[in-house]
Length: 309
Image (cartoon, rainbow, N blue to C red; front, side, top):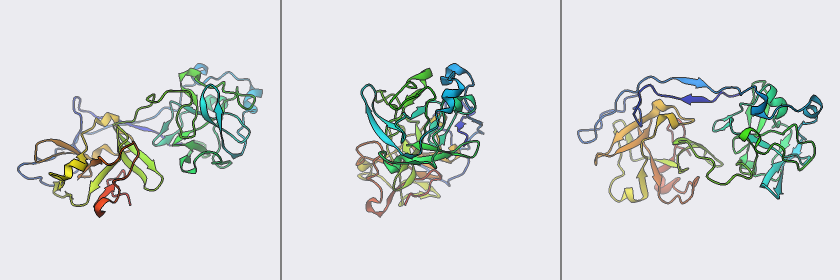
């Protein structure tokens, strides 16, 4: 199982901590980067062992009956919850709020996994779910668990017949999963994105997005040494400089790579590995990548600051 590492910073009251890697002199009008303070990281917990937290309490017979059927997934339109995913035998599949989708990580182990059996990736086919949303995550015991849009998915031991949704809302943390990995029966806006994280794009792989879900880009006419933006004037009408972020709210990206750049007008711009970052006004909805390859000079960015091609 992959451990989720939570990013923290030692200095308080700072929106963005400047990276430890020097980016060269910006020049008299653009200022210069500073040194980043040390950071600490802590692994995510394996999960609460209490029965209430996980909806435990099913007897051994029920737990033994909760194995997930192999075969293609199905999408069922539940009268109360709307579209949700079921296994090949018609049993509802669930996601857990204490897990993470980016990176994929399961916090349900031990007694939790008895009440909520992980769905094995090896025996499952996309079926009615978009294959691009299907993935897997390695658990602590070495087995591969199915993920939908990055979220590990489970059966519930107390669902004893196809079509049941007894796990919905258990502990306020368990929800039937929709075909796009969201919580069934929960209104939009229930989930929010970190200020900076990675989106798993079907064509480009894992690329950086901001807290509004907008893809961030690099401009090949910029330079990293010295750190300089060459997007000025009319260029800024389409390509807006990314704002600084709180490093407490960053996932999947090394904060040491995040550097503050002072533009010629005195405003601050976020950079990664000394490359200025931008969002594209032509991207109309979260997850759009319409800026990719524009003019042969604009490209989405990977977690290490490289161009996504």
